[in-house]
Amino acid sequence: MSPHVNPKHRALIFTLTILGCLFILFFGLRVFHAYKKFQGHPPMPPSPTGEVETDVEQIRDWMTIPFISRMYGVPEKILFDAIGISPEGNHKKSIEELDEEYFPEADGYIIERVKAAILAHQSPPMPAAPLTPVPPLTPDSPAVP
Image 1 (tube, helix red, strand yellow):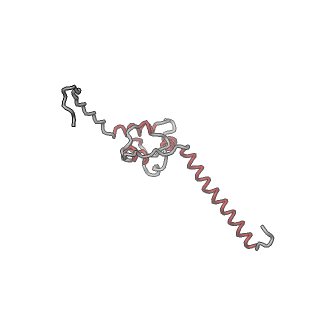
Image 2 (tube, rainbow, N blue to C red):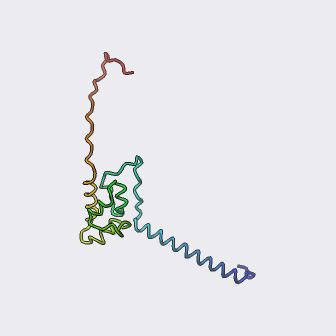
Image 3 (cartoon, rainbow, N blue to C red):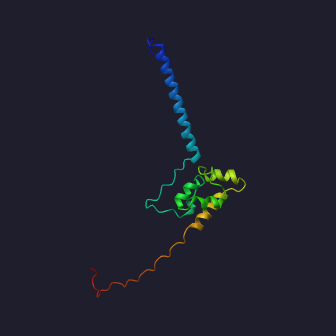
């Protein structure tokens, strides 16, 4: 800075610089914490057709109960009842966090209970319609329009 800068201006520039650095530090730490919490796993995109997921093997321990509820079309109440935990205060906790808090001695207990509850709630798969036999085309067959 030039020596002709007003001391009030110097104090203002110094204050704004410190505030800017604090702002960057605050939001940088939030991004770091979010990355660490999800361990780099992006959320699964919704199905392009709008259908609910049916493969329970896609469930991961970083997911929350509300996320799984929307993804599989199963009410949250059914999932929370299946694991025996109150939904109050637990909506934002991942399966891993719930497992560590409520069942530290049984590794993977909640994810298995959630998978079982989803499978029990899903309707049985519809059997495929039997194939209609089509006679082979022969030279005497009429042409199909």
